[in-house]
Image 1: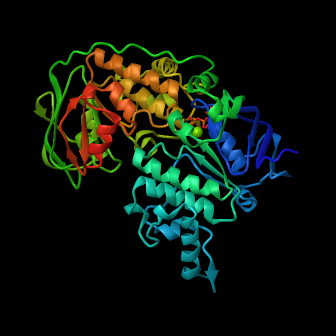
Image 2 (image 1 turned 90 degrees about the vertical axis):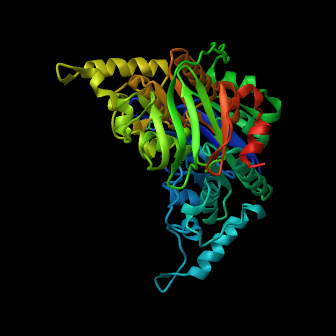
Image 3 (image 1 turned 180 degrees about the vertical axis):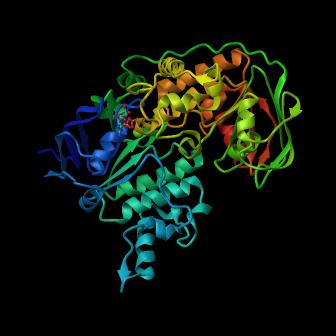
Length: 495
Ligand SMILES: Nc1ncnc2c1ncn2[C@@H]1O[C@H](COP(=O)(O)OP(=O)(O)OP(=O)(O)O)[C@@H](O)[C@H]1O
Ligand SMILES: [Mg+2]
């Protein structure tokens, strides 16, 4: 038998109507970082859930260190040494770091949590992440940055047994580049201890920096694998998509009248006195660290958070302040938290698409469900959403495809002002390029677009002007051509 840490062969898994995995193989070497790549809906998370005992395969076999491995549930997988950090964060904000790390497995004495032993175990788990990531054990997780929360999740995964395999499903999709660096330092330290890591990400630049090996899934099938150093990005993209990436030409933009203006807008805590003007036909970007106040700015404009001072004007008048009224006056928002506030997960794709603009479907007072289905199906095609049909509940879609449904709603609503907070979070490389050309097309049609993104290449290629937010203060807007990734980062750090 091979010396693989994890060996998978012939893994197949079907959900009603969808074949998520079809005869998939995977071989992870000891002490290496193995990237699992593939487009949205390719089957990556499904495979990981099988490795972690959260799903059972219909057929196929797994081996861990040469021994047959068939976990019945996540607890059995953990006992065998397989730990996972899921695509969506699951820390409890009101509990402390130590409580979160050992959630559900606190050491007890006479029926009570043994705090001394709990803290010692939590500290050991955090120490595995390297010296720079020491976190205060008794701080509530609410007070941590997203990177630190991510580290708490990983520490939790590492706390249980002597782990052999750590699975990270898109750990950096909500991190800025500084936080990503902190995570990578920790992963390098873990690898040194002989741990194997399976790493999922849509950022090829990142994957290239840390992964030793890769495997590519396409439509639930294994299509390529090998050593990272022996492959080019073009080869990987070709394997993922089955064809090359076509890059569109950016259209010429002409800015029209001001559709949205902010004058010294201040929220509860953030932002502090932000001013900007957004014109018809423009794409404007907000850069800055995670937590600098970009999301708060967008939320205040949209009426999700209270405005303490200053004014928001839509088409020159100071209007109403609730999200429902914002939608009604043609302002649409894509939240960075698609689960918490964008989507109704148990509802079908079609209802999620039309939720904010039902009046467009009304004829003589009745909502036309046939039309709802038609329009949804058209947008499913347009954005290449991988699903059964428009009736499928959003909860059954992969992470990236859920994000596409959130975008479908904005397109259906046909808002004039689009507030996009991390529009391509969790979206694969090809779809990201397609969404960029879609945003370009919308601006050419006279929409005004505000983009918040932690992915700097996205801001630089998409926007006409960019400003950086630092601790709630918005810097000057400058043409994108005058910025580089380096200068954006420097200003974000307050230098
Ligand atoms: N519970 C479920 N019921 C029905 N279909 C499902 C279910 N879970 C996953 N699927 C389907 O299985 C396929 C693979 O999904 P999976 O989440 O593994 O994709 P992924 O590669 O992780 O994508 P992403 O990059 O978007 O996270 C998708 O078509 C998805 O809709
Ligand atoms: Mg996934």
